[in-house]
Amino acid sequence: MAPVTPRTAFPKVLIERDSDSEQSSSEEEEEKLDEEEEEEEVGVSTANEKTEKLELGSDANRKGKAPITISLKKVCKVCKKPGHEAGFKGAAYIDCPMKPCFLCKMPGHTTLTCPHRVSTEHGVVPAPRRKACKPLEYVFERQLRPSLPSIKPKYVIPDQVNCAVIRYHSRRITCLEFHPTKNNILLSGDKKGQLGVWDFGKVYEKVVYGNIHSCLVNNMRFNPTNDCMVYSASSDGTISCTDLETGISSSPLNLNPDGWQGPNTWKMLNGMDINSEKGLVLVADSFGFLHMVDIRSNNRSGDAILIHKKGKVVGIHCNPIQPDIFLTCGNDHFDNRLRVWDSIFGNVDSPSREIVHSHDFNRHLTPFKAEWDPKDPSESLAVVGRYISENYNGAALHPIDFIDTSTGQLVAEVMDPNITTISPVNKLHPRDDILATGSSRSLFIWKPKEKSELVEEKDEQKIVVCGKAEKKRGKKNGNISDESDDEGFMSKSKKSKSKKTEWKLSRCTTKDNR
DNA sequence: AAGCCATGAAACC
DNA sequence: TGGTTTCCCTGGCT
Image (cartoon, rainbow, N blue to C red; front, top):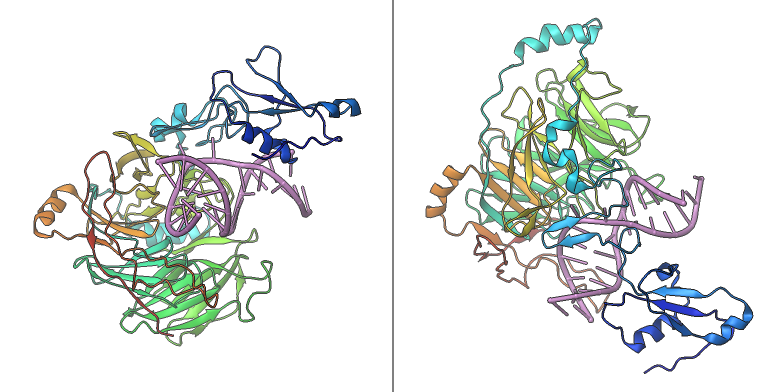
């Protein structure tokens, strides 16, 4: 029981609360009084509201200070106003009506009634076409157009989780890449800079290389002439070239040779692709410069070229038919839109199609990556994770969307009751009807339902738990212990309202080849 | 079981 | 312009 100690200089304090809400204890009120920094809680009371006011610190009134009203009424956590509350009601999220729509950012409605939430077609802007007249367009018509198939293949959607490694990485997954020739090998990079190699055909065969990068692995590409070697671009400003059999890596490019000199000079690498004809790795940094690495010599090739005056380049993609033509993308700070630029015919200033889709950024999330289906040469099917959850049988799940970008239609949405986290990183297999998903620290392999059911009967242990990969920090010497998984393994059974998967126990190896 | 903290980038004022 | 705030997260901890 802390005694109330009224201060002579303190103004009169009024406490207001809902008349029907639970009474708070007197200690709570006293604690609030002791803290002078309760400005956030201060609200102005109006005469017709059902409030109860307590007068405290009455001698302060003589000083002529305005009374402070402390509101204990329930207020909206978003706008701090009473009368409504934003947040989850069961599995459905109720928006604050005072804010613009969370999805399309337009005022006048909330996410719940946003037209884009129901029909993704709504936001599609048709492509403006122009007559081909420039040399680049001439090249396109003559060399590329004949080899571009116009017929879309029939979409087969991998809609059932076939196998998974739970808590595989020690930090969230940031990028994925399938092996170019071995069908069952999936590479994954994480926020900590580690590189995972998983044989999802055997499920238990997996390894994590621990010292490839010092922070986020943003992109991976295989060496087109040697599929044991993989290039990775990282926010540590390096490209690493890693031998997957030995785990030994080299750094053909390091943009921060002098180490950390502050955020104004630290360069990060996001977009990366390979021009296989020229044997070049193309990568762009957070200041808008393009760098190249020669694959044969594994050395830097040429000088850096400024390609984005606005800075951070997020992606690079070489045209698969004519690799000398590549596209890049930067960050325009306009979220929740999927945009399609129609090769060189589109107006660079505006996308040819724009689809409103919920993939808001968040500090705990890997940025969402929309990916084309590599099996669709017409480049109309894209896969992208969804930020906003939906109520599926009482559970709030974040589905993974398949979108036909030529129409804007949602072709399919896949979800699993065991995946309760958002899935920002997704990759479709280059040959098979397989989807790989990176969600938080776990990896999932999706296959079409009919195929999965056949596999399921044969393969019982298809979900592997890699245990609690995060160990406590060393207390003796202050070292941060390596987050390998020698201890702390645990089996886990997740609650879910529908089908429950039985998690199996396994070990996960972390290799450190320092 | 509920709630706190860290994270760290963009929006807001 | 910079200092402050921040809506659908995540994981770990108390």
